[in-house]
Image (tube, rainbow, N blue to C red; front, side, top):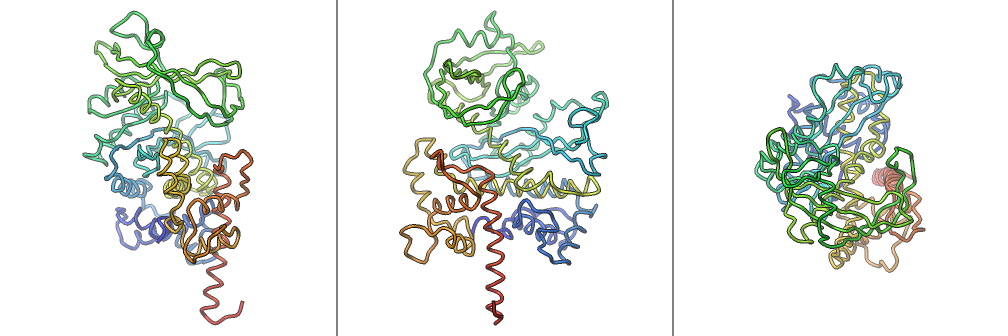
Length: 475
């Protein structure tokens, strides 16, 4: 059975939910499986015209006895189980907004200005990755909140979300928390968060935002780092991306190879009468006339920094942080969280809570077939070749790869078994309109989603045809 079998996936995630009744549990599993099988579609479309299923699905979404928190807790428990064997785990933290304009938006929170028609939730998520391959293990935490129009009406500062995420990870992961490294962007450069992590002997890599005063020296952090000796150099691939410059103006960042100089330091922050020791890795891109915004990372960490290899490992850890942005895109666009239409906030929250785990499933699908790319980036060439040569039935159901062969027959494939994983990835991407004009071999998220959706549509027809033939009906 494929690791992406929708029924098994849903059962694993929601079988242990505290829904108060086994029939409710069964309904959650059935609805989530249908939604996973039809990623990005509405709940009605995921039921494929079965009126009883449609009624059952909406009855579930409207059921106040099934809280969104319990739906999420069941998925978090499954992630905690999956995380147990990994030697080193990355816990990637970040916040995003779910935005809506339809009727229910009036009951949701502020996203931009008070006059914005779009309103919604702010959601802070923690995604677990395998540090070795950077493949996603699962979602371990999410916190939803509504931002009031008047900031003075807020119950508490939102900066507490970082420590709260660590608290819940601690509760859910138990003893293996010692193998977890929290990875955060500049918004988490808060002394109270760093103190909380060190108080609990927990590991982190946080990108610095503030040039803080130091105990050891007169110059502040950033100036102090500039004066340190170079530990070595490092080259990193920077992907093409639409982004903003330091003045907030949109720019098109072209793909390039960035050469970084690496410096390290052990420093102690002055923190309201207390001292806060921390290790720092400083990565600065060498200037070039073609680069208007050179890359510059100051990474605060608990990890050792004695050697260049250790410093580079910390940089590798931080570069994995972008995976949670991929999750946000998979959740909101691929799984369709922002396209849902409900009349009550709790109903909508129940739906998007299920879709959060479907977003992770989409992320894992793409990772399963692009793992060789990440292994090559780490210099593991033989491991990459071995993965590419694997049969694709570890990812695809038999019906799926057989239908896929109708669109793109693999060259030289003569036996009746499943073709390679590399072939499956390329074939799905081609179904989504991917043409490898840049010779990268890596398809966009959109191409993979479109290809996967197209394949599923054809598989449905194929299975209906098989049932008709089995029943003796003519096609």
